[in-house]
Length: 111
Image (cartoon, helix red, strand yellow):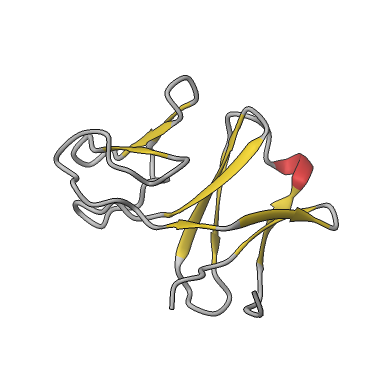
């Protein structure tokens, strides 16, 4: 993992049930990071159906561990990026997350 990591926020700024968006320093990809009961997950902040931002008024359901795109209602598992219902059928890319030096870090690890 030689690619640079992008700082999302300080760890205390991303509480359980919250999400934050960062832009990868190398690729510029928008990445949304979720705190689900203390576990962190990161997905590309783009619905695979209509390429709309998932974080833009999307519903983060902490009970189901999912995010719903407000544009057409597609839902995705935040742990895997797997679509849970139509109209989306392709997964959303997921990215590595780490907690280090008091911060939450992500990176776009696609080739």
